[in-house]
Image (cartoon, rainbow, N blue to C red):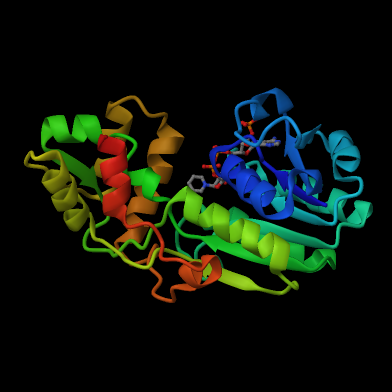
Length: 283
Ligand SMILES: NC(=O)c1ccc[n+]([C@@H]2O[C@H](COP(=O)([O-])OP(=O)(O)OC[C@H]3O[C@@H](n4cnc5c(N)ncnc54)[C@H](OP(=O)(O)O)[C@@H]3O)[C@@H](O)[C@H]2O)c1
């Protein structure tokens, strides 16, 4: 039995669909803190849904009963995630789970991105757990860059602090296919550095947006502090603005770049180019 923790999220839903297609719904359990959110996940009512809240350890033991292979999708409560992930890993050990796959960050062991620290600590917890594990060290999603194209096109500018850094992103669907493949086929001990086949700089990204939108759009590079202030200026909470500015600035040092093509090798097809994701967002 395969279980996906974080199944109600954007990545989790895609992984569920992949698992159902490959293993059959009877082999799949969807774990979510609010299973009502699983409705509309596109996998049909035949998938078993169970309550599993990373903040409520008492929900985790029953959720993991009978589960052999668990995908732990990292939570989104930045700052609280190490204790949350520890609760899930502890429960998996107690439940006799035979393999845990975890969605980490690209090059977690060396990454200078602030968000990497919680992933490093979670990876250490997995190593200490004694349970065979697989690290899905995901690069950035293409969709991170296409969520706010309309105002960028209206202003003719995309801002960031990424300089000339190369970004090898891929779609959530690409990473979801990799997660399902690994969950089904991994033996334990695999560390996958997952990134897009092709990379772009933010100037190249802006040029592609411009070409596809038919309007002039330029990339405007800022200091990390100015970019954080600009994000706060458009209404983002301070901590989120700082986090996004940090990730953008660190990407100027190629922290979101990887040329190994491990992701396309794992999923058996090329990753989705950023131009396709831009086109889909503009459609
Ligand atoms: N690689 C990247 O570019 C990138 C970008 C953003 C995030 N991430 C990381 O990758 C993860 C998956 O990405 P995503 O796009 O699917 O994010 P998402 O849509 O925000 O999904 C996050 C999932 O975590 C669940 N979750 C949060 N706190 C939980 C808790 N206490 N107990 C149980 N479940 C909890 C959410 O449940 P609810 O549905 O109940 O909220 C949701 O299912 C994120 O959580 C984050 O760690 C990666």
